Length: 324
Image (cartoon, rainbow, N blue to C red; front, side, top):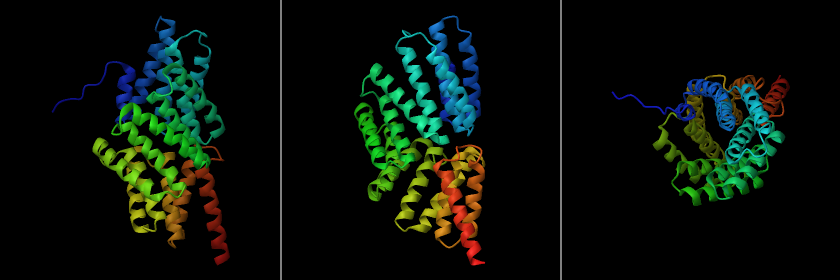
């Protein structure tokens, strides 16, 4: 049996581990890379390596559900970037953009939407200035701006940003590139909110086939796509299919992320809603309580999913009291 060969460069090695969902190992590699970069005698090289390693570590912490740790390391990285010389050059600008984008992602997931917006915009401005408006890295920021607008409930703005990013990526990389599948996956939930269910489901079925070919059936991106297909099925009245897909998604997330990860909460909320509308309030309540327990110490009190879960629990409590 042949062994897997990993890159010798620590950032590349950590990224490989990250992509394989070996997140604790990836975090350890990035932590070591930060320490090594601090000892580099070349100042510009030292700062650039630190920034890139800190950006990757922050995103890894976010994947692990360690939102506070992710925010802390990325805030430190942003201070380091801002303390750099004004003429630090293209490499510094690219590393700063990577940090801004990473911190924007963390803020989006933790519900700090107002803080995420200027970071994404700063990253976009830096990348457009250095790489031009048609670079795939620019498309990634538009992708993230679309996701942020979606989370805030601005679905028209989300659609415009997501379609713009998708168009850039297709022109740069071709329609079959894996990053294009990710853009389509992000566009589909926005289309669902706008009532464009047929296009949304078509995109999601294509994305699911792409992800299963590339990653296998037990991957995080497969789970997210299953959740979204389930949401479409529910809206179309196919409730049995929706429940089966939500439960499969939840099983994959639990296996990959652990039982207390914040990213289980959206699927728990969706499954609870299905149970509630299907006349199973006790099962719905148990799912809502689990989602609330997972989120309460991980996200802002204003986070949309946490607010939705708490509102649903209050409604169930009122209904139970009136029934008595």
